Amino acid sequence: MPLYEFYCEKCRKEVSMTLTMREREKGEVACPTCGSRKLRPLVGPFFAKTSRKS
Ligand SMILES: [Zn+2]
Image (tube, helix red, strand yellow):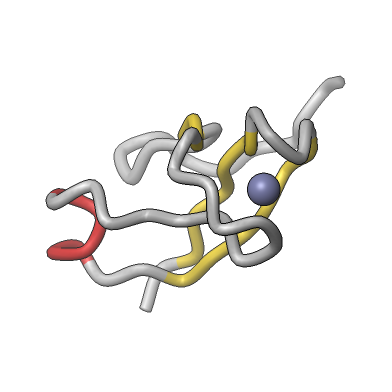
């Protein structure tokens, strides 16, 4: 399964999760730490992962 990175607005930190496409499309994404669904995807499936500058 692909690995997705999200930013949890509740934890205020980045979280990484493996999701199926179906899970992601349905928006059934919850933070593994706090269970919040207020997650913003940091990396889309159509963006190549390059060196991150942050
Ligand atoms: Zn969280």
